[in-house]
Image (cartoon, rainbow, N blue to C red; front, side, top):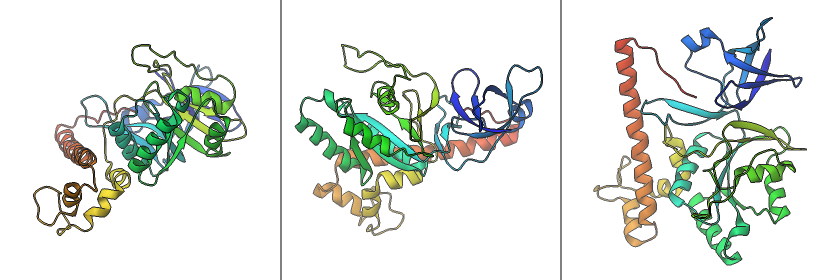
Length: 322
């Protein structure tokens, strides 16, 4: 039987079959011992339900068309898949307290998946003024480099409807953002009823409390589905060169004019990127963020290659998370 993983928490994956039946499942012993893949939310899987067994068994994870991947937040050099087989990534950032550096990192990871990316500026109703909302939107549009940006307010039904229109029937979207940006509240607005718990706002910093503790696929009436993920604190990059090229397309375009095709944008003569920084057309902070993220990816790749060499010499099985 084939189904889709619709929920993944600290327990067992919840798999829904085509007819609507759902089974809590565990991975087959052979899959645990020999495969590098574990089921993530959105995965298509083959399961069996042995007679007398209280859980289904995931026998195989079918090939993914895409995945949202970060580096395992532990010290191991392994990828961790947070979701798979989706069409869009919604990057949620609050109008108040926007973190540009985190937004850049989120955009890299989102674009790396190959899915369409949309930035959601949430909690617009909590901003100081409409002028402040427009200022933040302008800033985000500049950072997003052509990626669509939508402003969302719980007090503006049209803004919610605009997001809903982005998830038509058959579409699966992933909702990404740190705790407190209003992801669960947005899901409730999209669905029309409270399906996700929302936390109160702390008086000290105005941030929401962490409420979602599992990755879960939620159906939107008359539309598709969204995967509401827990607030992801750690967003260490894995193999994200494609994502960097997309998220920093302005810098990549400048780099085409560098004198040397392999310019590192350091001390090389004729560097068009560094010239743009010096003349003020490229912000120093954005350039430094680009260099940090690019170096992070290169460092991760080198360490992963070294880890693979060590494992191949020692014969230890590869450990995997996600």
